[in-house]
Image 1 (tube, rainbow, N blue to C red):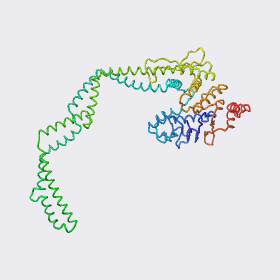
Image 2: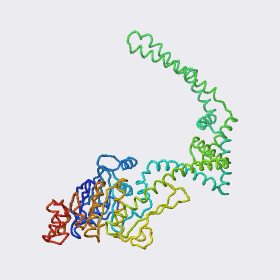
Image 3: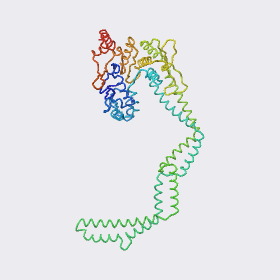
Image 4: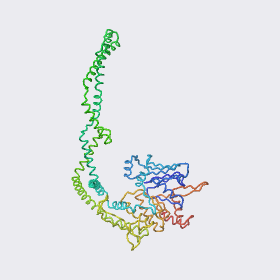
Length: 551
């Protein structure tokens, strides 16, 4: 539910906070007082376009903040999937800077407008005359019927199988759609795979070959350097080993005098041993590296092949080449086994179709069982709303193709007059009829489906007297199950409020400012009486208002 709405620096509102009841919230006020501005602020929360022209004070930013509590668990999943925090309270905020830049936040985390639009669909359902889309939407119509038919479990089972069916069908279509150009592509892929396969690439060979190539190319240099190293360290007349050994022997005579001298002698002795090892290593290196032009040619040729393949396929490593080889192998194998794959897929699809039709039969049968009840309940409510000749009828045709929700094509048809033909709602219902029809349908299914906070903007326009009273009763009963916010000019509807808010304007020296206040019981009497007879209200209107309020 919508717990509160704070509006700052928006249109003719300087600062307003609306705290909502969890049932029926009524908003009334004179024409032009700012009721539609509140709706506009809600629109910003729902991701509508922002414009700096709406700023009350052009030098300050506008802030619209809505707080929701008790929202559906599916909303938490949506938040988590998009990396937003989930808290007992969900706070959506829009800010409009004087320069025109707009920012959105969800639980204090920056949000994109398209996510705000998606999120708000789970939180708010705004119904405005001539802008009612739900009841003409085929998906909403079928959702209504499935909720009444309690098809959730069977639909989930159906959709799980349908997902597999769609995947297999797409795979089959992709394979069967192979054209001549794709067959030519197959030959090219076979060539590429064969080339890589013949190369017999090993994952670490390039490193090893590059190292070996450099050693072979510098074999003479290494041999000369090894001889020089061994000569200077071990073999020359004044070699380093003998010099250090002589120094060590001299220091050995004094090693008993001081621990530091003893350590110096030990270090010199260790260095002599190390030099002998270095000389031996240098000799070994010279022995291991031979001047081998044949092997150098083999290594260079192999590296040229590897470099060429990497360049050809636009990659940097042998691992990338091996991955390409694996992918090509799978594709070639898939093409090569095309006929067998097609046969297998068709068999699997046939099995899935049979299972889907079993579920779809069950879903369709349960839907058809609730058609008469829904038609009767909605038609009764239409009669109560002074549309005695109006009726709905549910048309259900079998689609030859399986869809995400079964095979039924469902369309709620409407006629407003006796003798008229039933037609799709959007083709025949006027604005006033659409409003009353929408209310009748939603009130009829509210007990069976999770609906968000519903906002009604003057859907009672053109309705008065007993009909308005019945509309108010429907709204009140609907509010027992779902939070409602209703902007109205109807005293009969206003009398049903769980909370009644009054929008009014105050003229200062420099401008007009909108305010909102919650009416007390006494103030409600005056407001409803004014709606009945004008300002100031007559004594009769005051008594009538008390009667409507049950006071």
